[in-house]
Length: 378
Image (cartoon, rainbow, N blue to C red; front, side):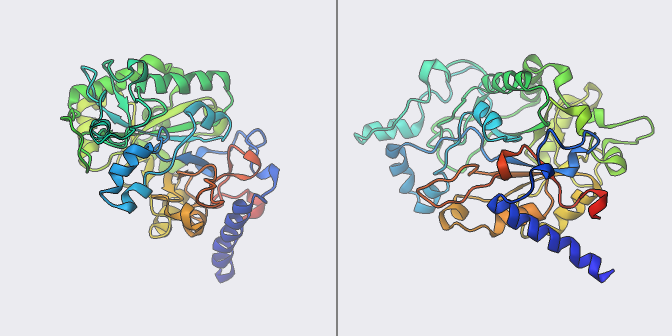
């Protein structure tokens, strides 16, 4: 028994090292070769953190730097447009920060641009190109005042981009889309942010339904079968569905936790079959996925959740520190934790920092989860 306890973590360490240098075998990770009988929780995939983000332009960066160099450094990462992430980088988890803007125009003239111009600086690209921020609707950005550049500033457009890609690639593995709803930020905004009321929650669900066909969405209730007392009971019994039954589909998760979960569920009403999966404790009736962003400090907890059948999203890096130092410890722990969705700011290396990146070998869409190996390896 002692040898078995040692073998599991040791094999995970070897796998993480192989992934870091791209040396796992193709048969272990090619999504087309992964048996359709595998369940979603038995895989590992790569995601991006703040998937829309573009680092601040030089004129705005100078202003942000006045608040502290480390603050600026944490924002100096940029992502490709979402369709390219999905197609070229095989990203299978996206994260969007959402601000309510029911009347439109709330974020059209950011505070940072105003201050930069007053100081005679160059604020860089106009985030309101084509009047995209003038139109009513939910907006996608990190922080309205200064860190506002986005590859897709309009939530509906982001949904349309994902839907078009999904329709063109009907055999793709399910894409997790994390939605972080914001009504406060820790820096000056220059505007009064709109609160996410019950009406706004319902508008969010309506927007998703209006763009994404119902048959393309994995709903929380769809995990249940007759005899299951709850969604959490279903996951504890079987884990997530087989990948053969959910290829080509998307699922949406509320990134916010705590009181936000209660606010959301009260707003949309249980009887209306809520669309979003919520990050809650493993004993909660709606438990299906959890956000555990620290793969080092939360390693043991993540492994327990994954072995139970829950999905877990963790982060391989944060605030650009790991990339600047080419430090891979957190990335390696993310893989050995068994978390199914490993999020990064660097699916591609930033040559100005180091060669650090997070990817699966040979451009694979997914690999087998080290905590759920084939029976022949157990």
